[in-house]
Image (cartoon, rainbow, N blue to C red; front, side):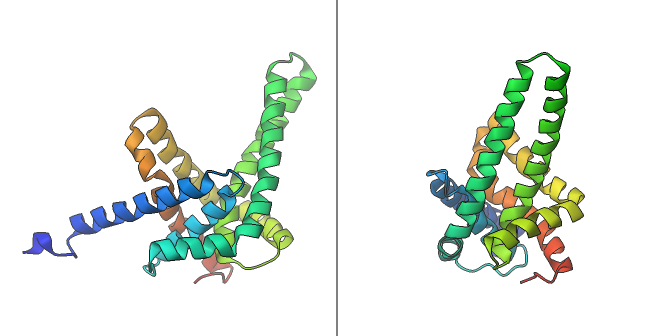
Length: 201
């Protein structure tokens, strides 16, 4: 019967949800130490970038292969970005508690810098998953590619925010698949960007 065929769209969708659930669980688990969140996100994109091209293999071995391979670089980049992000957020809080023209200007500047920070970090970890280079080179490439592809990277950022927002504020079970599903949707965007620079699989 066609309903029970593995090619049935319903079963393929259920199978994909199971993959996204598994990837999300792996991502949450590997993010627990916080400092390894960069490596976990890199591993997530390593798998989903392949899935978006129909080249997925065994998810768990592929995830941990990338996690171990990129642990040093991704962690160093993540810790640096995290420190900058915390400083920008603290600056916003201080500005909100101060009423002056200077504080207003600093608040606006911090908002702009935080928006840039979000764009750069959205581009960074898919790049680390796709490109083998030094930490400094990856940092510069991430910024340059984000600035040259602002709209696609912004779309990827909005997709990620949307999935987590729905999970937090509307329907919490979405959080069970949010990391994997968001990364998979974004993988199509990033694959197109990487193709432009000869970084395709």
